[in-house]
Image (cartoon, rainbow, N blue to C red):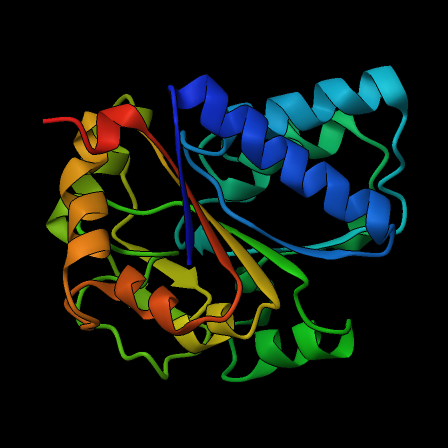
Length: 235
């Protein structure tokens, strides 16, 4: 794992967008694994701005999202379908038919097969939860897990509640890529920013590999870039 400590959230986002854009330039038919949430939001904004300026085409790019809530319509403003359209897909020339979400392939093995049929994920983008989750693989998820329905922990529900006007609207279940699914990606970028991620980042850096901390399995992957800002490690 390569660890880069950047000045702040903006610098993390700039570095991440540069890596992603360079990968697309090298392989215009790249298959991307995409994360949602506040951490990659600026990264997607910078990618969209670059597209507007330089017209790097996304027509042949395919994407697989990490996760999606259960119980929300795709059109709901807090669904990850809506997030991706708002923050990236509607701002570039990607073919929507080339964008995939796990809720479309809930049956065991179907999302994995769809990924395999498209050549596998070349570059997977990840965030990290305060409890060390990646995707919606909460603590004690099996490292062998594949795409499946999951119940969200109280910590994750609380963290997600800031996006909803009513706490009762916050989904308690989701569909997520499994940890094994994520680990099949050829290259992974993990992003973290802010003091609220300090514990997760320090646990990842200093603790042993354990399913209590799902992100720790990334130490066994041969090609991971960990981009964090100083706020993550400064006490």
